Length: 537
Image (cartoon, rainbow, N blue to C red; front, side, top):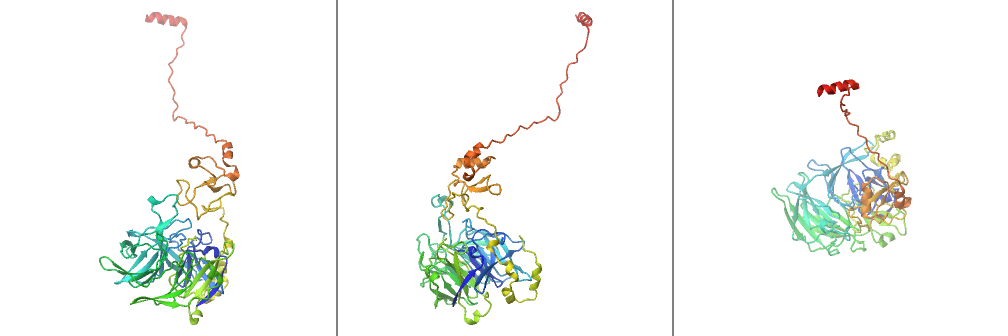
């Protein structure tokens, strides 16, 4: 084993606890970046490159027929091997987006094409399911089982917000364990079914799930009801029979207590290396062990841990994921008051032999999911310089500097500190995304905002609570068409000095002019009038 420090090149702020590392077509991909995607990478998926002790990210594009997938933290991820006509890919379910909303959708991420310059293009499709659907959650597991020539996905565990009827202002952002149900998802027919087993009495999250053929082993996990990490090892067996599936559960004696561990699979055999995680809230699990799955069940083997550095040993938290080829990417917080770009230090942990270490750096690998329980356009056109990639080998492309212009650089992004629900709206803004609670009855997952008509670029958005607006006044301003000015630009007194706009009445002209017929008047002399009067008398 080996431990090598990595220096991130203008990408450290994107890699945060809860991210996920995937591997498709020989590339290691980063999913679940911090914050919403930006213009340089609208998909939010990056290719991870580790060369000469440097960590670089490269933006990955989606095909034109792909759907949008938000950056999700702590989702459930299952690798789908190519078989039965299905391509290689990953199923992604649940997770939390940058607004702390929990997703209930399931996505399938596959390879669409690879260009002549070896640029990878992915395809993302949202999977539509029917039947008993799993609700929104995060920190759960998704595994693939095979039985009687069929394939299904097993979803278990996780956390979610309280039900709508139990959610109050005091406990708005608090989470609870999901019911201990096992969901079987048939990808071929798009149906889902829920199963309750008596052996699974408590919910658990941030556990480890290892699958082989028709069996899934659940190791460790955390329970919010008891706030404990009990030693747990459960074997779930799934038989995909012709009529209805049969599920059986068995609790094994050998317990394992840990959460948020990183799982590596160095080779094709069902031998997994488990490192990292937590034994308590702020007690890291520094030991490494190997779990071997065979026909007899599961057994554990001791594995020598790397020589951890001082900052890894003394840090209270850490996170990471499997980076393929028997290696893992580990991140720990930096000491002192570090900037956002230097908030974490990264290391590559390798469990390969010396012969395997001389091979390509990013080969092999399987599961790569970081589950941090601390809660702490279209594709670009072909450029003229890309014709140089014809006829070159893959190892030449990695060491070449021709693709440096495609490397993600945070300095190329515009400053988004003045936009968004969770940014600082004014000089006296006191909003904290970690401790925010709804103040108005109209707020649900994000704070209420109102537009100020003065400021840079002809106006800006401010938080209504920071402006000390009552709920009735906020509704009145949102319904009306009058301009609002924040406290930094005059406030309500300036708004009252603004003269109201006079609306002139609309003149409706009739379609036809009404002309009254007047009685004709005859001009007669007095002698004639006297003659006619005597005549009629």
